Amino acid sequence: MKIVVFGLGYVGMTAAACLSKQGHEVVGVDVSDEKIAIVNAGKSPITEPGLDELVARGVRKGLLSATKDASRHLDSCDMATVCVGTPSAPDGSHNMSYVVEVSHQIAGSIGRDRATPLIVVFRSTMRPGTIEELVLPIFENALRDRIDLVELVYNPEFLRESVAIQDFFNPPKIVIGTKGGEPCTALDELNARIDAPVFYTTYRAAEMTKFVDNTFHAVKVAFANEVGRVCDKLGISAATVHKIFTSDTKLNISPCYLRPGGAFGGSCLPKDVRALQYIASDVGAYTHLVDSVLRSNDAHKNFLFENCLKAVPAGGRALMLGLAFKENSDDLRESPNIDLARKFLQSNIHLSIYDPHVKPSKLLGQNLGYAFSSLPALRKLLVAKTTAESELFDLVVDTRGWAKNMALRTKWVIDVNTLS
Ligand SMILES: NC(=O)c1ccc[n+]([C@@H]2O[C@H](COP(=O)([O-])OP(=O)(O)OC[C@H]3O[C@@H](n4cnc5c(N)ncnc54)[C@H](O)[C@@H]3O)[C@@H](O)[C@H]2O)c1
Image 1: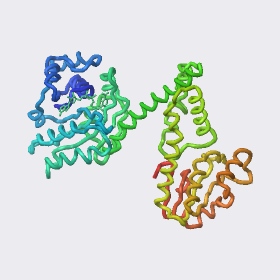
Image 2: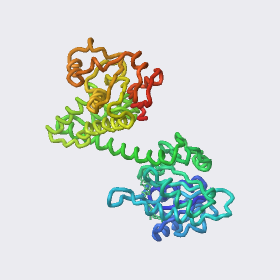
Image 3: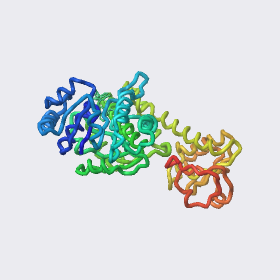
Image 4: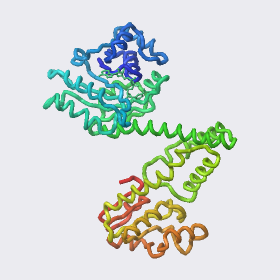
């Protein structure tokens, strides 16, 4: 394939050199005369282990070159890859001017006599909606009724500097965003020798994956460091705690507790997060991330309730499926479903609750105390399955995934576990 790579920074230079190693003819494009001269002299303009050798090899074999002017190459190439920077703007958003500039440049250079569409692959990190709302209109304006001359793809890059070549050939995953989530044959061909799971999805979902990854990495680092600070202040070995923590791939380092859905609650998580906050402040460890966890959980409870309010007016009827903090349990302590029930009642919504595991006469100890202090009307609110299925509701809030197996009479069902 002949591939034009826009932006010879950490991502673009690595991609250009690695693609030339795979035998593709690669033309690198940058606005910097200095970078272009360095590449054409067979060196890498960025410091990255192994990259100088790959660039030297590519240039020597005539497979890699660099230029400022892409126009004479765009007509004859199969693919254009956009790796220009998206640095922070003063307000914290991404500065999209380089992406816009390159999009105009590519769109204006596509010949009308192309036999096959030009595949334009965007690899820069950009906010969800960028391809559809910023990039596509540029191509539509330039190509008018010949938009078929281009195929836009969003393919986020996951490489890490310092091991970029290794990551290019062994990425953790390949995410390919297209209009309707369909595969892109040319990219599949390009990635044929790379062993990694491939996900085809929409532009927006692909754009979002990169943000989710990077933010999660940042959260992990901050979390680990907060734990480290508390350990340090308490004279505990953070390394030992880290080793034990990461050895648990069943609950800790695993997909568990990472699915967007309901808020957390129960008798342990809120209590222990609060206690760690207390300990941290006691010893002066300043755990801002941990301090914000319960507030974040409250924000999520409000979000869920606001969604409910769209479906049920004041004076309307709602049915909740599930009240205890999890299925097959009658533990009501700090259940987020109790908070939701209270919000319904405060908003003058007639509420019924179906949870076969919660039997008021069998509640004991702390559980009993919590239930009746936070939801004194519990006994009256709980209904049997026959009632839940025979009465008409404006909304059913399903916290368990039971609705699909029940014969409910309702206008709306909100499934808390899938946020749908
Ligand atoms: N650096 C990383 O580890 C990494 C990893 C994954 C994704 N990303 C994302 O990839 C993108 C690129 O990151 P980077 O670190 O390689 O950036 P960078 O700043 O190192 O390189 C960007 C290059 O684009 C060039 N450029 C700017 N305008 C241009 C134009 N009109 N035409 C041609 N070239 C132009 C710049 O001169 C520069 O050489 C960013 O969106 C970044 O968030 C970076």
